[in-house]
Length: 339
Ligand code: AHM
Ligand code: MG
Image 1 (tube, rainbow, N blue to C red):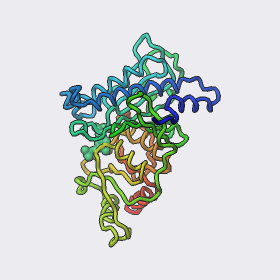
Image 2 (cartoon, helix red, strand yellow):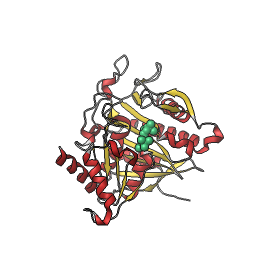
Image 3 (cartoon, rainbow, N blue to C red):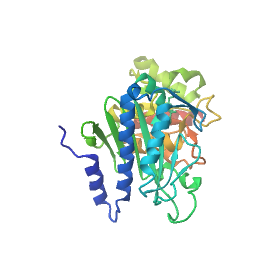
Image 4 (cartoon, rainbow, N blue to C red):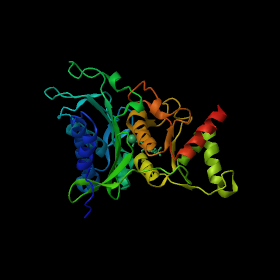
């Protein structure tokens, strides 16, 4: 049995370090964690619970929703709407922000989430995850009326907390509040997350990249140049052999990078131009960039630091290049040279 620090203990100890902390934030995270445990249970049981396959609906992004996308979204909403920590929520799966139902107290935080990232992996029993981001809601929490969508449009540097859960061989929760990154593993018999990965750091150099190679012909020149050079290996300008991975689940990809380094790219390409990219700024790129930077890595669109982007839309998409610092800086330099 692992007798290390539990997540509950970790959060309360963190809270003690912040002067004047009310426990509001700790309470919010507890509810997020409960949602994650419930989703983990659903994901783990898969076909036994009848949660595989399509839901027969599309989300606001025009993507087919899986049954587990819809269930996970519902779990996030129900676990977080009642306690009075939130002013509103925004989800990758929902058109408009979700308002706290009448009769429930309203709080000072905003919760944004991708309830089940990489959900196409569900049916083939490969790792999926949940991603979340917490912002402060600007203005007075006691004002009447719905929280406007503009309240959410804050750059990633304003995040109070970001985290992800990975539903893999074990369920893990990785989070940052701006003081490094810590990883917790769920003990399924006890139902508690336990601190197993303290102060996670991303090595600055790497020999591993992750990109969907089938899009090669659509990429811009700097990304092609980078990948071409990796593939040339020892004989090429990099003078070393590279390895490639693609899980098609950003959570699994980022988790691998936090564990052993690497670079992950979902770059701009000619068929994504109109949309602005593939991954969503508010539910995927910002929380993951916060975590990666806090672990000593870097994150960019190729042209600018993701965390500094002023969002114009809650469902905005951006190109993403993140991971080992020296590698991301190299790719950014290739973009500058090509400009
Ligand atoms: P989702 O949020 O709809 O699941 O999509 C995001 C996922 C990322 O996790 C992953 O990196 C990417 O989409 C995979 O895309 P592709 O299928 O083009 O390889
Ligand atoms: Mg996603």
